[in-house]
Amino acid sequence: DTIMNKYMNTSKRISRSYGKISFDKNENIWILDEIEPHVSIRLKKIFPKIPTYQTSPFQLKSTPEIDNELEWFTQRYPLQITKTDLKILNSGSKIYNDTLSKMDEILLPSFVFKEEQNHFIYKDKQPRQYQWQMAKLVSLKLVSLCGDVMGLGKTITGISTIALNSHKGL
Image (cartoon, rainbow, N blue to C red; front, side, top):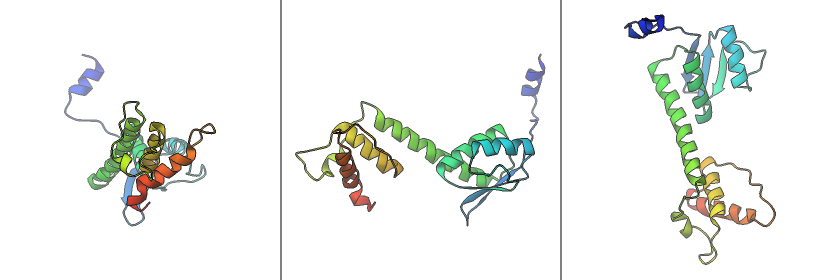
């Protein structure tokens, strides 16, 4: 038996914590405290909005993208976290991953548009598939930068986005 096999077969797990993480529901932020110095350096590289001179505690606004990155970070550098806060972290990360999956589906050549056809202003002049794809992406992320060659229909894409979201009040 190798040392690794002996470790894997034992019922006790060796765990090490590099600090603490908690969620502030009132402020909608993650607070990372008592982070070890070498882990702080890595944290600042992953989250560049944290100033390089700042020391623990660190605060990060909770968004699905931040939650996803924090979830990965806590797998690499285990932090003490309550079960409730871990559920919040995992939930935010899931939202982020679900959004990425939806975006991938929209970009597939096999993606079929159905409900969008009724949203456009002119029923006889519908946007092309790539214009609907962009409209769906903007609807999903609520932000986008559309830069196509002149004449490909950026204006129609914008109108499609508005038409697609008019019933949502966006």
